[in-house]
Length: 409
Length: 152
Image 1 (cartoon, each protein chain N blue to C red):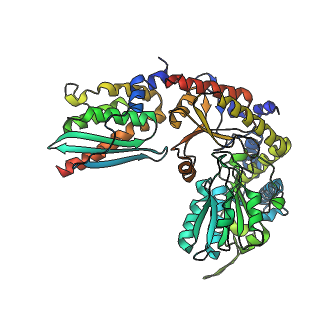
Image 2: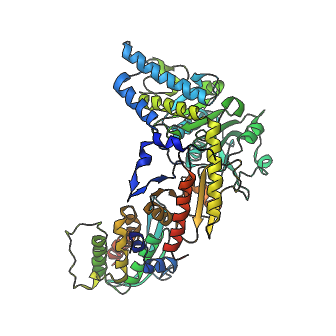
Image 3: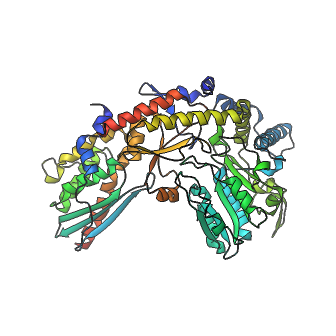
């Protein structure tokens, strides 16, 4: 197995203990822990370079601006963007998706147009589209899942017609771990009027992404799910799409001229970055992609695939445990949702917490998916570069203890 | 007993797996619903009332063992009680769960001060994030009781 355990010493929080038990952090799909390289980059920025960006004439402001724009270049290059200007800093993936919905969708959708989604989307890739559909008269159509929890494309020909103007799909489900059919949907949209928006919040942190070969029009992702700070994420777009897109927020930094009744926008990407941006967070984001680049995203993916395979094997040994997600690690990531007997997910999470293991329980901001699966809630373990097979073993032991506590043993 | 075993006592698991008074009432009744938005747990309650006495109760809901067992035990405990006794019970329960401070003490001699099976929920106190689970049924009951009093 790809051994990344030496990295663990870079993550100060992994030294924490609860009741004498070393923390086993299995909630990286919610947010990842931060390596000291990211923490120190943010700290160093505040100690040495802090000033507002893009407007000071003094040298310190120029240094802050350089640091901010260098971070943009790093993140853009991390996803294979031809130009760094195609990378808009946002508050996170949610804001990025809202920018597309309100900045592009609202101005182009007409009554009767369709937005094509999948039932495995996170709320952040459903709710903005519902809001914009309500304002425009567009309608939402959904692709369902097959028996292996993957998006079912057999219905694609039926639902994909000239009315579809936007296809919004997750690159990877935060619940089942299944990869979304991005390539297939990009191919289906090719030659039509539809654009493809990829929610990459769970994809970009876990696999190599190259926007040029992906072929989507927009890609949204968050820094905090890939070792970076909270409060920052990114929207990447094709140049012509970003030119077409209207800003959703007005204010300072995003204009080239302001009159009494009208204003003109600054060029892309600045027209989408109203107000003082999260500068220190951008610097931390840059440090996070540096860290991931150093490991190599192929290694990140392989490690996670091996660990997920091992977890699926260990979980299969536990009686009454049902995994909601693809059985094969090909085409899936390291989010593993499950139920155990009649033990409610929150009770599982409490018992695991008692063992020092942090997992998520609930609907995972994917209520349509939970209804589709006919479960009120699941427990979810999700893995990242710092997780080890020994931690998977502790998860398995704790789940056996949950059976004992609930009298299932 | 470990804190975990104290939390998930047999009586709690029994009420979770075999909830009492589950269903809804047909005759005239007051209805109240509660929701913990952070975890999605749901609880609903029908109370049938004669004068100031709760003559029948039915509960619905879905969620974790603590929220559902708390509701089932509560339903068992309030049938046949009058409003004042139920209010004493709510106060006593919240004191036990450390939700309320002791500025509203309940006379231990009053009938509503006897929690019986419900005392099994004391183990929840060691798990502060789960106290809101145990309390869901009781906030719903408080709501239902206010409606019943308004009707009376």
